[in-house]
Every structure is written in structure tokens, then in C-alpha cells.
Length: 565
Image (tube, rainbow, N blue to C red):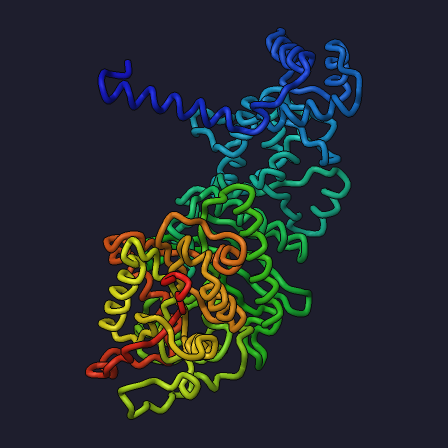
């Protein structure tokens, strides 16, 4: 079955790795009362009984536990919590609506959900409900009549099932279309729902929203449809609860209304393809419909933009923590310069909140207020800086933001200072690309604290090459901490397998790093590193200006005297 020789060994090793991982899982090495296992066996026997249901009330579960000599309330809830964590049953103790229901068979629950969020083939549909299935596929609207039809065998637990689907971000309650239906819903309490996952591409009907986004969420390397559907559920629920207006859904698209009554805005969320690395992103468009036709036009209101942005940021963090911890994304805005030539160039919001942003694609400096609605109005830094006639030395205090700074620890002396050698190579590559680079190639002389502060103050950004030696260096700590205090953009580079913690983890823990553990890795990531530098280097001269300009022989990023001793 598993072959011979190396193949068999690989199979055996895999089995051992799985067994070891299982032993390290939570609850595996803990001891539990035998009667808890008897309860589990009783549940399995109950499911095997003819006519039994795959769920029971909390009181029924207590009665079954009592037969296994489990009568203490605290022990009972602890046991249910354990089996919930293990995936044996489904029970939410803290949810008042769901607390009274214990799902005995999780697979049954999945099948019940699937019956609703999967549109069956036309030949398998009841003719009476074909129009309801079509509406679900085209507009994502799940009518209450269709729910009753699909779940006709589970009507006694219908409310709990819908509550579970809302809890799992699979659907949201849809507001009524008009006042008459609102009164009907309030009376009969039979609302309809929206299920984004059911939408089919053909439902777009050729629709393509080409309006510029107010901001974008760019994902690296991809955006799963399931994650986007959950984003839509949260956003549509939030907007409809605040405005009472039902959102309109299409495949990978949502149109809703946001903002207070006197500042109503039309808001579009759309999943589109990003030009960067062929990854996907979410475009958020806002249009002021409260002032449409007036002198103010339909320019989006700053307060509404901020509320939508903050909600999206908070929601993405929540969904990432719950469903996709490994997903990576960046909140961005569109470069207005590149837009004029039909290109979508997305700029991280963190790079354009103050002053200006230098677009190296179009070779122009753009006031931040043209990119980000909450950017500082002070754009003095966007004014062209006079070029120094001196080619021998840079005065950092007079020309701030004029160089890229590489912060690193030389590395162990007994290994020939490997990090230093690689950073010299990186410096040469960046200089060849037209950047001025501040790098320490000799042990620091003079007042190192003052020189360190000057180096940080004069940098447009810092490349922090972190390693075990960097983590343990007092001077590296001083430098990185001061850079963080001065709000200098930091681009982390990983030199070894060390995982940043304590002070270093606090500074770079949430930043995306680039691997430079080998020269091959460094050269592979060099285009991405340069792309990041470009966003911060608004005051750097373009490459043709730097031709023939000599670089300082002994510029400094860190003092590593403790590494030399």
C-alpha cells in the first residue's frame, strides 16, 4: 500500500509526526473521569437508535448525564465544554439563544447548512420553489418559505439553526423592503435572510463597477471566496442595522447605504483582481447621495469615510483571528497619479497619512490630502528640496529623509561577520538602483548616540535586518526604539531563524518581513524591498540625478562594538 524503501520510510515518518502532533494537542495529556466517557458512549448509542434526533435540549442532556452518575452542574457544563472543544458535540454555553440546544452530531449540522447554502440542480427542485431557488442564486435572498421547505423535518429547531448560521457568518437577516412588510415581519417574526455564498457569477449580468474606490484592502497572496463572503455578511449586517435599508447583492459585489440620516452614502464593496502579483483585493467605493445635485456634489464625507474604514479594519482583524489566522492584507488607497494613465497603483494607508507620497512610477510627489481623507493638511514636505552641490557628504539635519538606512548587527566574529557582508551587498544593490544608503561598515567612532540619532533622523525609512545577535544588542535596541519613537517606517529583513520577541517583537511583530537568510533569497525579494522603499522615499532623488555622486565611505546605522569584543 505505501511502497518500499524511501517511500515506506516517508509514510512511517508521516504517521509518527501526526501521532506526535496529536499528543501535543490540548486536552490529550489530561485525565478525565470515566463517567465522562460513559456519557460520550451514551450519546453515540442514542444517535444509533431508530427515530432519534441528532440534537437534544440541555435538560435532556442533563438527564442523560444523570444516568452516567454526572449530577454536579459545574462538572456537567465542564464536560460539555470539553466535548465542544474536541468537536464531538456543538454547544455554546455563553450564548443565551443557543445554550439550551446541544448538537450531538456535527456532521448532521454541516449537512443541514449545506442544504440551504447550496442551490440544488433544477431537476432536483420542487417546481413550487423554483423561483425562490433562482432568487437565492441571483440575488442571495433566502426567503422564509424556502427555509421551511428545506428544513421541513427540523422546524422545531429552525430558530436555533438560523442563529448558528448567523454566528458562523454564513448569512444575515435582511430588512423588509417596505413599511408593509416591516409591519408583517414584526407581527409574524418571519424575516428573510441573505446568503452571499449562494451567489452565482451569471447573476452579475454583465455588471462591472468601474468607479474609483475610496480605499482598498489588498490581500497577499490571495483572498479566499469564503473569507470575502464573511466580510460581506458583517458589512451588510452593519449597514442595514444602522440605516434599515436592505443591501443589494451580486456575485462578489454588495451595494448598501451607510452614514447618518443627514449624510447618507451609497457604498459598494467589490472583490477585484489586483495588478500586484495577480492577487485579489476588496474595493470600497463611497458616494454622498444626501448632497447629490447640490453644490457640494457627491464627494464622500470625511466622517462617513472614517466610520467605514474603521469598521472594515476592525472586522478584518476579527475575521482573521476567528477564521484565517494566516491571511495577510493591507489597507490601501489608489495613487491619483497612476490613475490618470489607467493604472491601479495601491499605496498602503500608513505611507500617506502626512506630508506627501512620492510615486516613482510617475516621478511626482503627491500631497497626502489627495490620497487619504484624514491626511495632515501640512504638505510642506511635499515641496521640492534644493539639491546640495556637495557630493562628498550628506547633512542629515538639513536634508531629512534623504537616505535609506540599514540597521543590522554585524554577526558573530568567529563566523566572519556574515550579516555585515550581506548588508554590504544589499547596500551596493540599492545604490545601483539609485538610492543613497546609510550603512555602518566600520566600528563607530566619536559620540555614537548622537551619530545614531542623526542617522535615524535623516532616514526616509529603515531596513531592520533582525537576527539573534540583533535582538541581544543594546545598541541595536536603542536604535530601533528611537526609530519607532520618531515614527520612522521600518521594513524588517529576516537574517536567521530567530523569532523576534520582547522589545523587538513589540516594534516589528506586526510587520511583513522579507527573507534575506541567503543571497539567493535576498535577490529574490529585492524587487519587493525596493517597492516598499519607493513608497517612503518621496524626497530621494531619482536614479539619473544620483549618477556619478559618490557615497560616504563610513556612514553608520548601528554601533556593534559589543559584537566586536
